[in-house]
Image 1 (tube, rainbow, N blue to C red):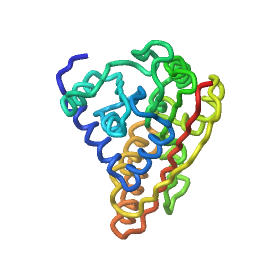
Image 2: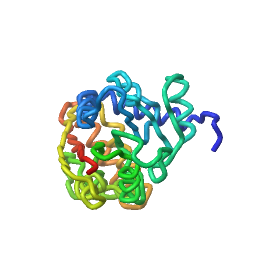
Image 3: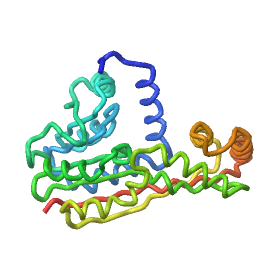
Image 4: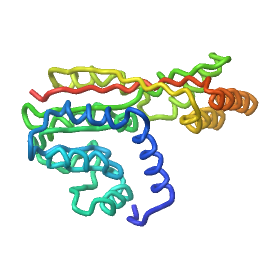
Length: 252
């Protein structure tokens, strides 16, 4: 791919930054860093680093942080923002490290984008040193909780959007995935932010638009659902809960 920045890459960064600015997001990131149990100078990789926010925050905590992303455009954006950061092009399936080279592995909202999460987990175990730790964080796309006067239509909209994701239910499987590839001391947490105003309305509109675009619902159904959610949002009657799964483990 070209290293030239595209509007799409910049737009994705803006979306990711908006997500990371949501209430509770900073505390959840901090919790993910805590679970790595890093000591000063320990090598920690943030897989799917995007524009490099976690790399910067891990560096501030004293880690030798490395960001890896499959997108050369994202790496270019991250390098422009943090010229001294260690940022590398690479895939979750083929990380740019020798066996046992890193102490901490973190992947936030990454595994649902992979067609083969188990292959990525095996690669994570390869690059981690004995006693190294892994932390996976992400949403289950089939578990969005949305209040609506039409729950059946809402269920169809959520399902249709979920089905466009390579591994939409990977987050609920993080614990068993890590056990399957040989990690130990696996722990799991669920953090569920709740939204009741217009902050997440664009995301809800996007759910309906996607469901319509794949033929799961009619244009009339999409429009009616979006109108309902808009009315709820601006009367503070919207209800959206997004369970986020945070799983950590140790390499034996």
